[in-house]
Image 1 (cartoon, rainbow, N blue to C red):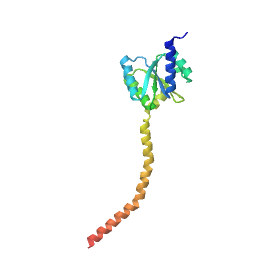
Image 2: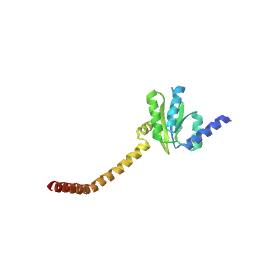
Image 3: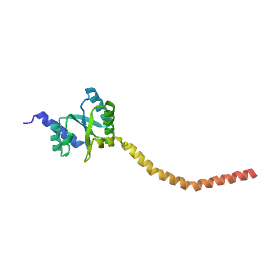
Image 4: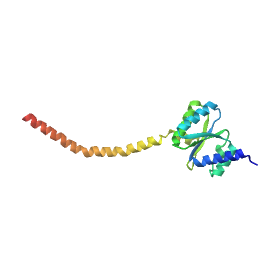
Length: 174
């Protein structure tokens, strides 16, 4: 008969898996308490949270939540980083921490309905943020419009310059 605390833990993990569309699985082996706290703080800035889970309970919770294909990610010490904001920012926070500390490792993740391996998460962390991508898109759209406005203003500008030169010549002649 399962204990009540384990049943509650399974419910909590299942609810977290259903509430977040993006999450990353982290092997937190070798992290000290203060390093884990630092990682949680970095993830909080990226609108994400980190929770350590028991693999057997997490497998049951994933089945209860209807999330498939995660069983191979639950090997060894496992923590799940639930992303509630920009998935790129959370991936960058994880990757930056792992590069700095040379501890822990990302096993993979889930982005909406796609399963990611560690290499996919690495690629995701190198993408520009959502705001940067929007700014680049706006710049790409605005650039031709600015060029068109300059081309259309060219003849008017030329006429104004020619009239100014004629006026200057007449002023000099008089």
